[in-house]
Image (cartoon, rainbow, N blue to C red; front, top):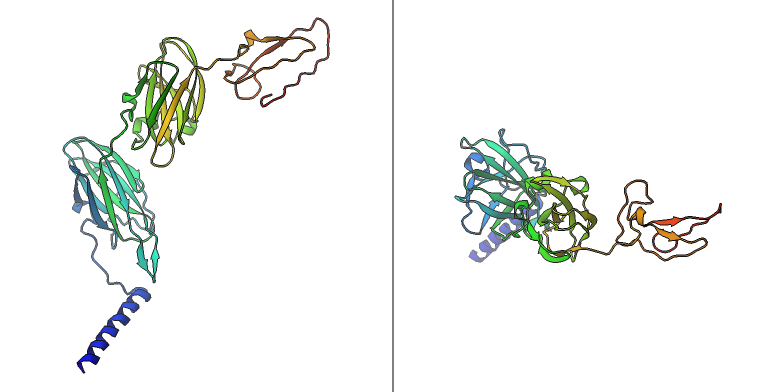
Length: 352
């Protein structure tokens, strides 16, 4: 009798478990997370690396929640809050992640999380906001207060983990700390890993460089005028060049993997190398001083005999001001027939 009764209870438990997994809406409602409101933000001590667990299950939206960053994951701004505590300036990386979840008898992929960093004044009012995805690289001062808001980009709310670390930034992560290039030509190894996108870098973005991504900086002041080719190798990097006139920056190029420039003696130039997408990586910066073709300028045009044939190259040629053929570098030739002549000029090869 006792044996049969035990079997009944076990089978009832199995049936109840299956019903909970299969029938929608059987989950028991829970209270919101304890840090559901910014006034109850959970403190994260930035003194040491750490892992912080949290949940977005049953998180709610308060009427005074800021709206500067969007969390469109489930159609509502259901977020939780953390207070970042530090007594000194600190570089910190916070990565938010969720594990796969089990629902409807199958494993579901992890949700995509997003974060917002809010700087608050002594009264607790938000005075500045910056939006991030699932990874936030931040430079925090020891004098300001910061709130971190975590929400959904996509997927269903569940538990998550915040990994707090303090990565070593490249020494030339900021414009003010640009690495000096003293000798030309130069080949320099560098990395954009753990570099940041800083506000002053975004202010000076030009054209297609609006989203350069993680970047590092180099400075060169040639003692003599120089024609240079600036390029990157060994990675998926982009670069741009700016002229530095007593801290007034002027963009000289758009965004690309290679630029040919004429540098003026005594003028300071800044080179930004960036990884547009992803975590960044190693690269080689090349500042070369190639030999220009002898007929690179119109004033030095090569004389053509009639009839005649001549070999030439436009490699490392510069673009002449005024009307030109194409958008690259130009080389020049001069024809001076002694009498009226019908001419056919034909260029063959990879450039024409």
